[in-house]
Amino acid sequence: MQITIDIPDSLLKEISFGTQEPEREIKFILAARLVESGRISTGRAAEWLGISKPRFLQEMGRYGISAIPIDEQTLEQDVVNARHDTV
Image (cartoon, rainbow, N blue to C red; front, side):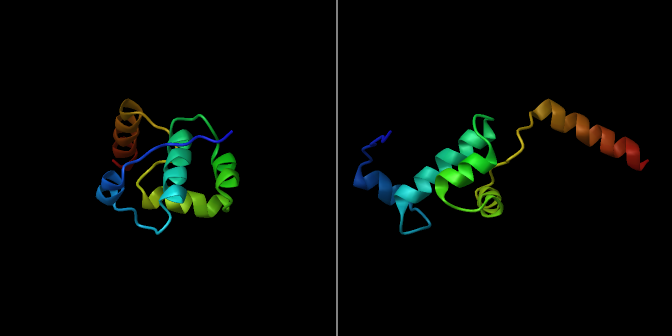
C-alpha cells in the first residue's frame, strides 16, 4: 500500500528536516512512534526502513523516542525502588 500526504512547502520549510530526504525522515518518525506505542517491534521497523536494528535504536535515541514504553507511574515507582535499594 502506498499513502500520499500533501504537505505545503511552507510547512516543510518550518519543519526544517535535518536530512536532505524529508520523505525518509517522515517515514522514520512514523516507524519510531509505532514502536513507542507498541504497535510494531523495533526489528520490524528497522526492516521496513531498510536499516539495521542497532542503527534504528540509535536513531530513536537521537530523536528522544523511547523503544521501551513506560508510563509515568511505573517510572516514579522505579525511582522510589532505586532510592530504597541505595540506602
